[in-house]
Length: 228
Image 1 (cartoon, rainbow, N blue to C red):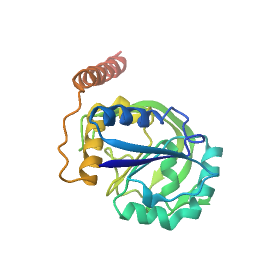
Image 2: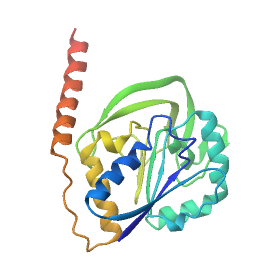
Image 3: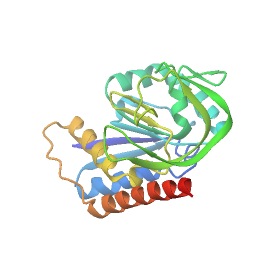
């Protein structure tokens, strides 16, 4: 088995180090002895989504996002075909807005029915998000977007989940900060590639313990701050 990964717009959409998601995937794929190939492509490259099992995109400035949107619009049909074919996508930060019908006053890819509007105030905060996939998601958000008419949320009422498309405004990078989600995501990816693959649990006992204690600390800290 070989996993082919595309880190798309690695140079323009990596505002909060979301290429760190690649690093943590490489680390565990190495230990699972799974072969992989990673391509780093951007606006000067020709894209072929059919070659990849996983496509990752990260957060950026609004200006860089517009540049990348203009580029990926040329591949609208290919992106839609890849998502319908159950290719895995991990799209974080404001890159998510590129997949809706409209991004502010610009036409977006139109893969999903939601629209993105600009808010008067910027959201800049740490978040803890309950969900049906794993333990609470911890991360950071910093955006001036609001997603409206989204009926396919990922974490609670946030993000987008459709087939193997996972999109969220949480940055950080999300996989390294959330070990249960990392294990879930990697297991889903490998079993989709090869249903007979014998997935071995990742060595994440310390990661999970640190995550659990940190979530509890953050919740207690917020509670005590409000009580004061």
